[in-house]
Amino acid sequence: MSEPAIIQIRDLVKIYRGAEEAAIKGISLDIFKGEIFGLLGPNGAGKTTTISILCGLFRATKGSVKIDGLDIRTNLNEIKKVIGVVPQDVALYPTLTAWENLTFFGNMHGLRGKHLHQRIAELLAIFGLEKHADKQICACSGGIRRRINLIAGLLHDPKVIFLDEPTVGIDVQSRVVILDYLKELNKKGTTVIYTSHYMEEAEKLCTRVAIIDRGTIISMGNPQNLVAEHPEFKDLENIFLHLTGKDLRD
Image (tube, rainbow, N blue to C red; front, top):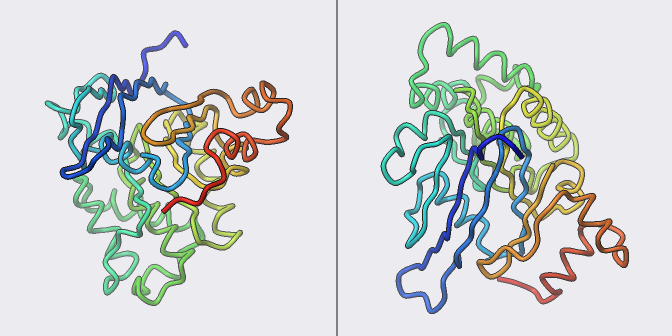
């Protein structure tokens, strides 16, 4: 691609204190503006660690990360203005209502007043949640919580959105709503970085995927091209199992 990468990762290493082995082992990767990039791997492969470093939650042991041209080591506050984060675990206050949660997270991103209220109302409508606006999160279903969790990461209209297992454990209807919106968001230029255990979902959604295992990227490319390059396997899931093995992971 001719444009500079919106995310540049070079020789990324993460070693947790007391660990015998690095969680991330020298990953280098470019992610380009407008991609839906899937980071796929079994449990413990390094997906969440990588995302956490890119979001500024963890510091790398070694290596560099630039997002939108900014070095994460020296410009983290500026980077936070252009990224949105949707964590694997729902990060909402259970005793606050959906509207109160979204107001709080909007305020964290510097949004106030009429603009914030319009933005919350717009996204609640898109995700079919208007009637749940005044319901406490603890009284909401898993699918509703997931959708509100996603909205919280989108309120400030980020250039880059990180999603760690955004559709895990929810009903088919909620999954379709979330994935359809991500596609529409991407068409408008938002770059999406996405982790998932759902290979069929990733195959349909992502423009490129990287398969990571034991802290190393072992395969990368367009999902359809990867399938074409492995004619002995019928889909991305079978390629994934071939590359990472069928042993159960903790």
